[in-house]
Length: 438
Image 1 (cartoon, helix red, strand yellow):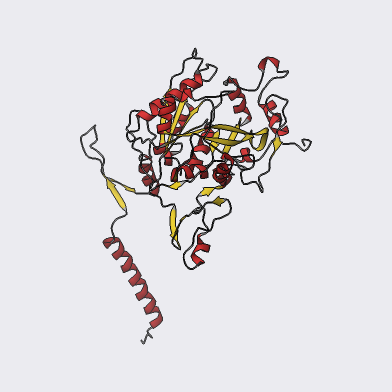
Image 2 (tube, one colour):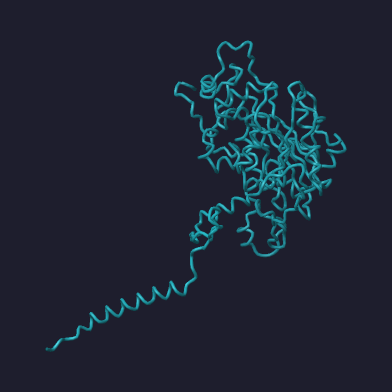
């Protein structure tokens, strides 16, 4: 009998055979993607258990990496401040220009030598290194000031104390300033101003990985403040720097100390200027935009002026490194330079910028709050705080706040808040506003 050979079928079978051989070859020759782990001997019979194979997954890798999360610093550690080597300047057409403030593309199109750099809007100076707030501060001071670019950036240390429930503002402050500040010294007490015992909220958060990517820039200083201590805030200020500076083994006289409260956030561009330039008057004050409940309300007084910034040497000469000796309240503090005015702010002062329930708790733990508890007609609770926020009423139940709008306002809120509006929407939008409120 004659059979006709089907060449097409033969070719298909040959291709299938080749594929099978390739698969076998791959499993024989390729390195195993499994990791063989042999368990220890069975304690009951002394025999080894069968080896178990586990796939090395991305989750497993992440778990091992979590152990290497940078931990925050403590006083018992020796801290070495590093000098930033980030390049902030570039030479264009024979002229040294500050990159952030210069229209670099325009300068590249020019031919020949340029006497000065072409500045972007909001930047000034021959090298475009003076932000608007610093340039205006120079004009307002009526001093002949000639800032000089440093060979190396100075180190900035920002010290502040946590009094109540300001964790959200602490996160905003540190995130906003982390690219400019070299070390944050954060002091926290286990008592409120009124003597009530509380948890160390910030320390607990740090231990759980809060701000994990920049914990290496945080020096945490816990302070035991007893109930009978009347000078609560002054004691914290004193301990803050005296204990913090002892942990730094290479502190320099020209390092800059920035001292502000938790809810005060200085202008990042101004701090960067002080980091990169010399020959500016000291001490420096900051005129801050006074926001209330969030950045959508502004106090009618518009601003507050807060200290401040000093070189380490000036702090030692004037106050012997004791921050509690810095004049506060009605005492006059003479600033060599004040950053900010009524239209161009030196930063933000966000007063009572919490969720309503946290505002109530913070009020109860604060001595200097505006509520006269013995004269309040109705109970101050979360609902009443919501009404105050919605209608724009200050906590004294008398002063009306000024409504502010984000669009077209370059100083509405810190840039980090604007970049993360999904997370801080309650500070950017008044969720308690009602149509009947003007």
